[in-house]
Length: 134
Image (cartoon, rainbow, N blue to C red; front, top):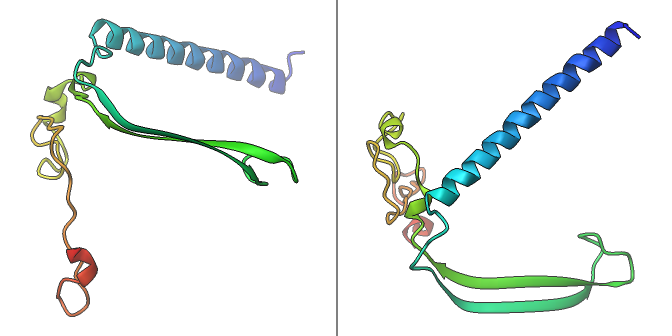
């Protein structure tokens, strides 16, 4: 009963219980912070072009039995929303970015309107390729 394996199992069980309890506490506190911060009160949300398609196909993939039809559903929509209330992190910590000149995070400011663009690909002759221009 007091062998090395039973002691190792007891220690790992207590460690797993503590890590699980801390994870649940962090998840609950994060959800409460979002709820009381008003993150779900997004007023200017619009959902347009909703298209729902349901198909019956004989597929072996995704859990279907061989020879039986499986229902596949696809939902396509356009979402326009201001998600800035969801970004509630400490911007003073973001000021110390490793590369503050890259991307939408510039010296601790968040810009949700900008898009990150990669530079054009150059071929071996030093000219920009046609694929990068399109």
